[in-house]
Structures are given as C-alpha cells and as structure tokens.
Picture 1 (cartoon, rainbow over the protein chains, first blue to last red):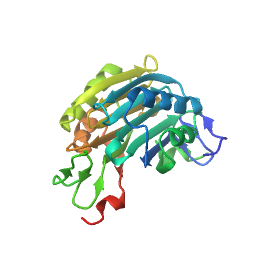
Picture 2: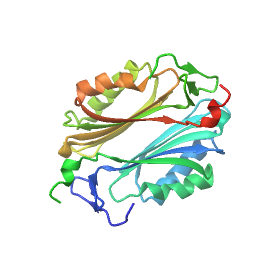
Picture 3: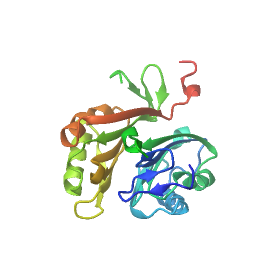
Picture 4: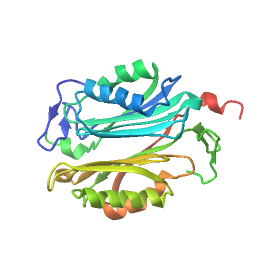
Length: 136
Length: 136
C-alpha cells in the first residue's frame, strides 16, 4: 500500500487509484506457537496494533480451556483485529481491518515474531465503490 | 454451503470437498440505514448470530459521537461478527466468521432487514490447507 494515501473528511481513504473505507487483511497462520494464553495473545496484538499506530478502544480474549484455543478481538478506533486459534492444528486465523492513516501491513512483523513466519494473506479493499472514484 | 458438513474433533469442518476452519464472509453494505445507534446495532447483530445458532460470548459497541459511525464486535463461541459504519456514506462493513456447525449465510436475512438489501459479499474458507484433504 502506498504511504501517499489521503484520508477524506468522512474517513474513507484515497490511495491515488481508489476511494474506499480501508484495507482488510485475512491472515491464516500455520506452524504457529503461543496459541493458548489469552493474556499473552492480547498483549501481542496490542503491540501489533501500536506498531500500526492504531488506537485500541477495547479488548476481549476468551480461552476455551487450559491448553485449548483462544478467541479474541481488539476493537480499534480504526476498525479491529481478531484472532481465533486451533493449537491442535498449530493454526490461527487473524484478521486486521484498518481505515484512516493506519497501515494493517505494519502489524505483520509482530504477528510473525510471536506466532509464525508461515502466513497466508489475502487483502480486500473494503467499501470499494467505483462510483466514488468517478470524476477524480 | 452444503448442510452436510461434518465438524471434526478439533472443530475444523469437512464440507465434503475441503477441510478448513470455517467460512468468513466480508459483507459490504450500501444504501444502508440504522447506522448510528450502537445499542440497536448490537441487538440486530445478536439476532443475526442467533439466527445462525451461534453463541455470543461478549459484545462491545462504540459510537464515535451523536449521528456518527459505530464500531462493534460480537465475540462468538464460533468466531465473531464485526461491524463498522459510515453514515455519511450510507455504508457499513460487516464481517461474519463462523466455524463449527454454524452457517454464516444464515445471518444475512437479518442484516438485510435492518441495514439494506444492497450487499457485496465475498466468502473465504479460512484455514484451507490442501494437505489436510490428502488421502480423504
């Protein structure tokens, strides 16, 4: 994502080619470690959010039992980060949606450091409506 | 999604063609109404979750100010539902991720009823790893 994006008054962004709400990353994490401790997972994702200069509004992380998976969400002023873990599969699904000036790709170094380098990532521009870009 | 899917002991699902963690819908909502009241939005999304027979663990919904957008998340035993609204654009981004027996498409009638029929939907099978399906 170019750093030259412009945040419009209604917090949609203009990256020079499109006008849209923000970028939503779906991150599948394989060969993952550190998948069972909800407090540690929350701290890691708060650091990831801070690395993207996002503002955390609320966090809730739930353990499904000792040694079992964790589900959690950070609500951000710029959207959210979620995680769901399957320790039996050494798998976690993370999604990072950020609008405004924040760049969700800036969360990835912390995610790699804590969980795994083996990521499958898909990116969607949410709220992409070609009509908005007409006449630019 | 076929109703014949099987939930494996570790809560991955087998839909007959793939083994994966669950289906993640990204739902962009256009021409939307009812975008500014966090309590009403939470109630609507709880109803949508219940329509999919999901179990709500926690909810947090935040208003950015009177008449302004709302961000919120329902954490589910089966993953999560999130929403972020831009009333100035009559736009909302919703995502519905559900694993286990739940079918995220069952949330759509309530979403259409409350917000808009004008939805742009993309679906991802999270945790889709062809290696899991080998030898089926």
